[in-house]
Length: 399
Image (cartoon, rainbow, N blue to C red):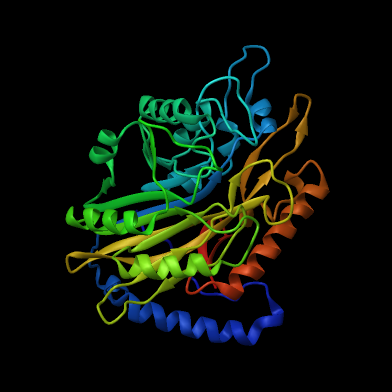
């Protein structure tokens, strides 16, 4: 993939212009130190690059199930949900999302015990999401049979997945999930803090957020010599925009044990992102505490959208390093038509300049409110992770 053009600009926060200028200077200096190969790009030197996108909670409330149903045929189709975001997802080499439902078959239900049609996973794959993590607090909503059914349906459509397993033998064989792309090898591990009190019975397994277990698994992963070890953790406190002390302590601990990237989900709202320069050992860290909701029927402020985080990693002197990182703000548009409510995931920066797209001005205003609130949060708290903004028919990084 061609590395996206980096432009460092002042985003629309006039009340923090002085801070913004300092951030721009610091961020540019960070990139020069972090990415010395950037200077060599002018000479025509080639480098292998791989792009990754991480996506938050894919949920399946009752209204989403109804919207996907064709009342004439009784079939389900979720493809239109991703129609406005497909290009951004499929542009990445690897796209990983949190599937926060079971695919346990009918009766299809939303909260509190989710079971969505398998067509939801097919639509994810069609949109470019080629890996789903399945360990979350709703993994066992339909108990053991639901865990196994979800895995079998994902296997049947050929989408990569990890976090839940049909048996101990399957976990021993398939965990960690090793993903290879253009010479890059990733070890992906996924865990959840719990399953809403529902007991996970044998033979099924849901990876639990147990410190000793994760440390052992990181060691096993590193023995396979991956370029990156990524933890996708279902953690934190719902609807809290600031990471808990438990989250920050766990992140520090897992980084010290060998994790390279940590991606978080569960709070259903955005939390900060951090890209730290290499330490004395040459190790860098990338951390997203919470990606928020990718698609759901939650409509309160902060829950009606989320972020996709995109990383570009580049091979330099035989090793892989992050060369670029940023986030896309996404918002769930739910217009009504003759057949009821619809669901569409919008890349916010592209559609905030298109008020004519929206059937109801109130929807446009709600999206703008989400974007403003999210930018204020992430602008003030992120470390070296700016937003991708749509400008002149292209996505560019702005800080």
